Amino acid sequence: MSSDLKVQPDCLSCILRQTLRVSRAATDNEWLHRRASKAVLQQLQETDFSTSPAELLSNSVTTALKTLGAQDPMAKQRSKLRRELLPLIEEFRQEIASEASLEFAIKAAASANLVDQRALMNVDLVSGIKILYEGISGKCERRIAKLIHTIEESRQILYILDNAGEAEIDLLLVEQLVKRGKSVTLVVKSPGLLHDVTREDIETEVPVIETGSNMMGSLPVLCSKEFSSAMADADLIIAKGASNFETLGMPADKAIAHMLVAKCGVLARALGIKKGQVAMIFADGRRKV
Image: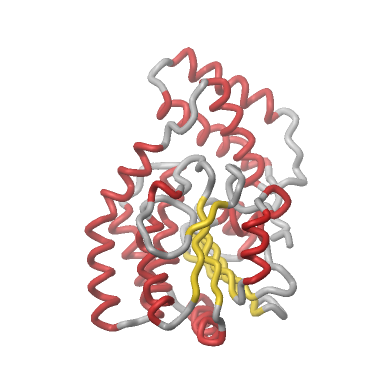
């Protein structure tokens, strides 16, 4: 099941930076920032380099939140992301409506994973997502064609969301899937860490389930029976973001498409692409392509 992407030394400073952003979102108290950072640093000293970056980051953020006595400091950030992306969402909606293009919707959804970058730095999401969309070509485009063929042959699709705001663009793709007669189930976090979308962050008539875990990604051994059953029943799994790629990997007997933006050098090197590029990792249940 694993993607075989494990924690690298480069991950440690990145994780510390992300937990500090969470601390600052929770409180302006610099003493608490230092206290949370110290707790995370102590934990990182015992890093298990055989785990995935998503697992280590989840544990580190959880440690910071416990130290701060905070539950969901990123809730306001998730609402802000949706408001920030509304103009682009409407632009994409009109484009998809005029062309009824499944390919356009897939490219838009994949590019929208740029929202992941907000965990590391400020970035102009609207222009950045447009640039990524226009730059999709070559191997990624060929894999999208294979995904469309698999969608046509599938009846039940499990769609695992990643970030708030980004999820609104995912819903444009989901609308196209439903119009084509597909039975779609959405998966959200329970509750979310960082910008991870929760049930409260989206409005849709499509069935929504939770992973049953608050960790980033969807590590099967930590997820609910409901999630595991939905995975088993799905003809196709579409998973967004690096954390889901790191924790779900490529099931040997299941058609799965991972759509993400390589937000760091560790991930980019593992995928054989440049940092900041869109990646589509697809397997039809027989082999990775």
